Image (cartoon, rainbow, N blue to C red; front, side, top):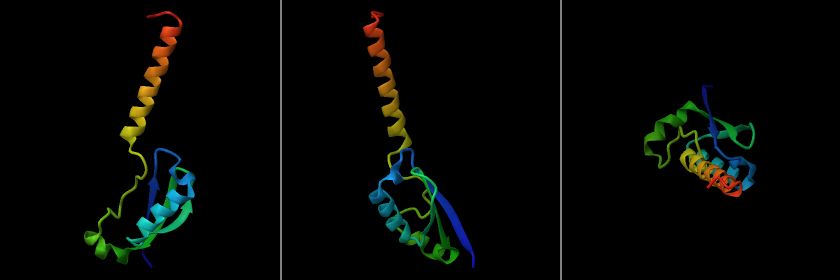
Length: 97
């Protein structure tokens, strides 16, 4: 029995919410993927038999996706804006402006 595995990850604790985990697993089941283990709230490991590869071209979703949830660009942009806002606030409070 030949299996393939992949790890799906998120930049936020996306799998901490049961609804998110169930949604991703339902989407992955369309391509034959099954949950092997939840590593933490950021990562899950799934597997499928290689016979499911034959239908991959007809799928609406990339069967080899490894990233879910908010994109890194959104997460990092929000963090950068928050950091700049805090720094500017500190400068204003100490009278640097």
